[in-house]
Length: 604
Image (cartoon, rainbow, N blue to C red):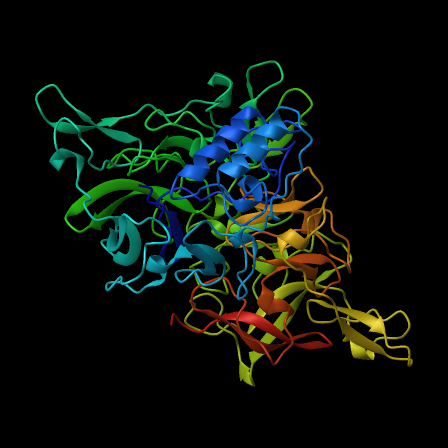
């Protein structure tokens, strides 16, 4: 029986208690295309047919319909396996899988993507800002947990799961689990069917007891053996069989991972993308896990694959069962983070080389380690002197200077001047930024000398200043007006190479190499919005749910959705807990703008 819990929310942190179900977004060289849950050739192989056949006879399907439903009838059965087999042996039979659109590619509140049997695409109840495949049990409220598990597996019950974190805080969730869960040490000898932590298997020892044996972890892709190629690769890559017969890291554009559709427990010799390792999970299945999650508590110190997280011990309780595990937890400003370095991955054969930047982005650094965070040229990662001491931000010399003197430099553009910007909210002086006690009434910003509002600038040049997301344009009647520009959609609607679309959480919209874009983990570094996009289209990509849009100075910036809304109708679209989108008035020289900004209003 397969246990596939959802993410677990703990404030800012998002933990993966088990692996991610398989929903391909795009593909490379056939991998993840219709009828190809395993191979990467130009047509299915007999191995693909075998994988589809295995999916046809198991209760819990881990292959998406858009990959394994070869006749498009809405289910995976033995007919699909036969169709794939015929295609594999050379028959020109047509494959008719439905289109791929994974649940977490769709946007709230619609959430209309594909999910496996027994789950529906809903707004994540723990995070609230993206879509997740959830069972009726997961959607039911803890501690009652009265949801139905029949759609997931007839042999599972909706059970209460309690999670305890290092700071002794705890959370409760509902999950579909076997009713007879027991620890390995309490299971019956010599069958030994009890539960162990990840990367362990319950086995009989020589003296009549059941014990958890620690399994060896996968090495790198270069050390793996074909055809399984169960080795690790860097961000955006997965280990696959090379034309020469060995294994190599190739670009990963989404889709099934051989770890979860082909590997046999407990050896778990399949491949995982993005630096994850294929290993045994708690209930006897193979899952892709971050190295941290495959580690052994209490010595938790493995790598976490999203920035701003550290590997910490967590206790999980289900009834009388208690398991100590390692999980990736957001540092929340209290823990230290392992410094990462830039890693270069070069693939062989026809695959182009790729540099994967794995430095931490400034805004995800914990205070007081701001100085180690990544910022663009000319900026420093610092704690703003005007916004309290609870967050890090990329700031230039001017922004770091103290108002009203504003003696800093605008090194990024010699045509700008460091000037005082005054802030007021709803007629009241000041704006609370971060968790500072006193509202900030003035900061320093780089602005053109002699700048004016758009409405008073001269047509047809119309070089005045507008709020973000707007362009100063000729109104064709001798005046200038701030024209509202279209807002970016989701990553699935974006076009390469810039892939200007939004992604949730710590992801970034990237080209898949096959003419489409997909959301992939963001490890820091430059983004196409600020390095390749041109105003006013600003069709580049931004991480952390931000949108690429025209800023106040007419260039492309990564902005929170709040910033491009029309004041005074602000609200929502801020990333940090305790912030709300509020209307404010900013004044700098002769320019006065009514706009929407994220301000701290207190934790709800």
